[in-house]
Amino acid sequence: MTTCCEHIHINSVAHADPSRTAGIRARFIADVNRRFQRLINDIKESIIDNDCFGIQVQFRAHAALPHQAFVFEQDTQRLALFMEWLQEQESNGILYLISGKDSWANMYIDSAYQRGLRNADSWLKRTKAGGSVTAKFPSGVRQVVQMPIHAARVSTIYSRIYDELKTVTNVMNAEIRTKLAEALREGLARGFAEGKNPLAIARELNADISDRIEKIGIARARTIARTEVMNAHNTAVDGEYAIAEQIIGEPIMVDILLGGNPCPICIDLEAGGPYDRAAAIGQLPAHPNCVCVHIPVIENSKGEK
Image 1: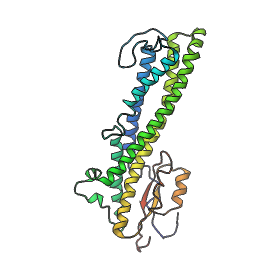
Image 2: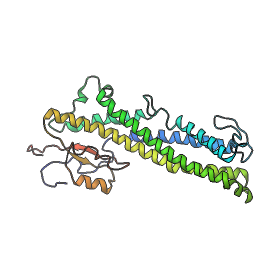
Image 3: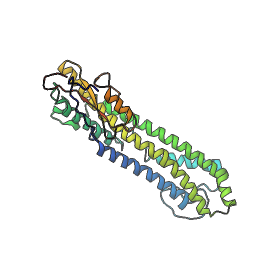
């Protein structure tokens, strides 16, 4: 980072939440947690309460898989039926219409994008541009997002989130399939040979599956939520900077405003600034969970940058 008076940095002190999207990220993550926890609860009900694999006898009919649903099937058939059911549950929860207009995830991306438009206007007020054009629309930011140029940008993010969550569930399901295959092939017989209570065996199997969901599914989905909220915010900000460049007829230089407890990657990027706005496209988020943002370089009292 240049230390003389060539330009003034707004980010002399790192901000905990420079994008002001912490609330959006928190709500998105809470929704992710609820959807995965619902899946965990359904699996527990299926394996332990309804004894879908016939490990132990206990009946309680509900929305999950029915009592001893797969008990008369071969191991491979039981595994295939369970995985088919699992994927259906994911489609109705974690992946529910996520690529469509009424996706459960779209609201968080829309909110982050709108926050980016508002932030860009605030930051541009410190420059020659005097603010953003979008923020001055009489219809307001929420309606502006429906304009073709903005709708196309957020639509790209919708699609990317779906692909990312689909990949997460695929990896998670592969781990679950491996755990189940081993349990049905050897684990159950070994447990009975060791004199374990059937209910205890069912609980161990359920715990193994829940562990895969928590460590793969939930952990990675939380990272996706945090990162894509920032992607939406930064996409909106860059778009406003690009429009401002056209208005003032010159490039906008940007610095990196660090988030709280910045990592070495972002500290190095901040030190290397300022950057030409066009050259900095795609620079942020610099890594998963990154919360840093681009802010325009402002002129000092002498009109210098």
